Amino acid sequence: MDFQEAIYTQFAQSFEAQQQALESLPPYIEHAARVIFSSITSGGKVICIGNSTGSHLSQYFSTLMLDRMDRERPGLPAINLSGDGSSLLSITHNDSYHDVFSKQITALGNPGDILFVIANRGNTSPIIQAIQAAHERKMSIVALTSPEAKNVSSLTSQDDTEIKINLLGTARVHECQLTVIHTLIDLLERQLFGYED
Image (cartoon, rainbow, N blue to C red; front, side):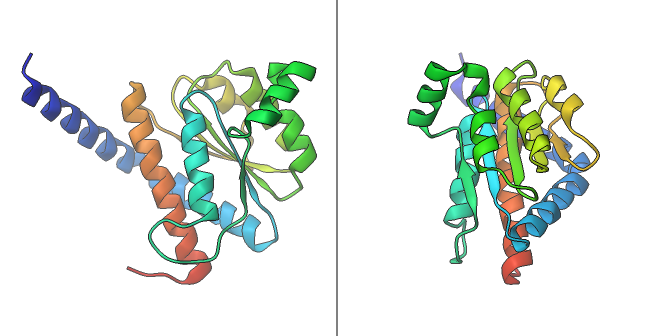
């Protein structure tokens, strides 16, 4: 196996995927940034969840919200439900695995809050029930998805924002989702704090 060729292939595929995403996603990313901005400036917060490796990305997004990316600034209100192991284990034990997010959203979510979802698998009951619970709480959804997350796509309403990475391959999808996360944080900082390049 030629490692240099394999390395080149990985980078080339990543560049190609990013370019493809750039051609279709900007309007959705901009809309999501405006929706999150509106929620925060109205006293709302962002509740983050994810399934599979998307849980790590949802944790990363909430960390960037609470702390910062490149510029020093005040923290922004965000909670990640995927990383609270004690709550997840307790709810799973006492109720059901399917309720691990929805029960927390019912307790913590308020009208005007945002549910930030990273879902790359469609038939994930905890994510589906979380979206349903968020809608019941009059929350808006911002969902980062892939073509496999068809059930999630079908649950989003006209008041929600879906940023779908129409690519195959977990690595490429996650790379683009990571870029979307960085872009959302940058746009929020520009709106909230007037940052420019």
